[in-house]
Image: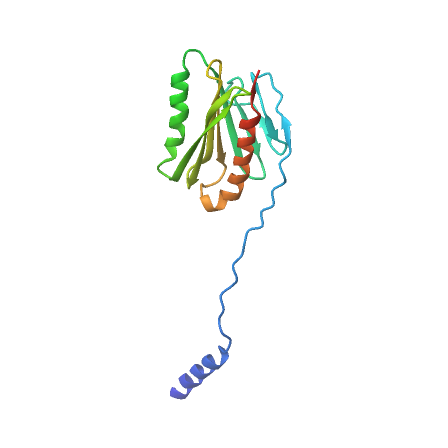
Length: 185
């Protein structure tokens, strides 16, 4: 019996001669197409340039000029809402500024940057959210007199910041381009 155990241990030790080495690190190879923009042409009181890879959806509860820009391959959507200003600018601003704060429970950080474009009369804020929050970026724009527009990006996936980071960065660039090209009609 001892001989059998000794033989088994000897075989086990001799058969494991190779040194174990860790696997090399792997990197994701995400290749998104370069952004090509086209003007969004609707009957709404605004226009902007949108990425050609987006699909335009307008069915949002019957609200006029509420649209979705869907990135099917990235499983993300920019939800855009429009409201006319009717002596309610204070409440619209308050609601738009509270929206990013709803993500503070899961967010690591929320950075807001002021946006001003005097040429197009667009003024607002762009919020970048980092961490496992449901929305990675949000914005609002207004002319302070007649128009108020908000936008938020959401992904059709569990919010895992590391996994959606490349797609979120791609869509954030498109959101900034949308803001820069927005014109009131």
